[in-house]
Image (cartoon, rainbow, N blue to C red; front, side, top):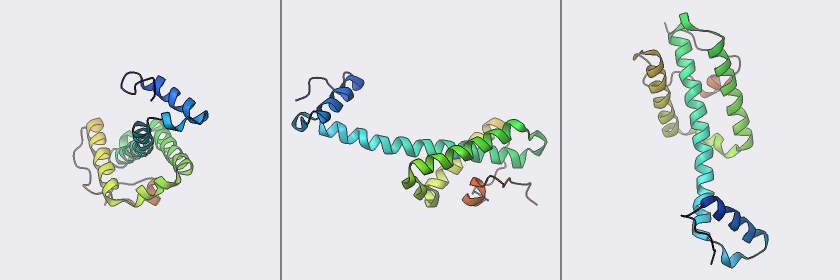
Length: 147
């Protein structure tokens, strides 16, 4: 059995679990908590992608619906989020499937609309995402005012 409790000190517990693996003491591993931590890594990666997509979409909404306020700061944020998303997808290729997941995209879109509304005071954003993911992630594309 391990000597350090997961509930008491997760960092010390993690270090002990790593030591046990490295020394081949597999029978002493806290397998249930190790499994939970491995699952949490995947969830964390998904949250990272969702957060970056939310920020990107919110800024694209602000860009489209507040053209009078368009500026370098928004351009930099949009560019940085696009680059960070591309890098994240390169580092964790399995996350690309999220970009085709309608339910996930709907949640991210809702978060982006909420964020943009909160930051702008506007409440007339589209209920559904009007742009393709390819456009959203394209370095050359920016939304324009709807007709």
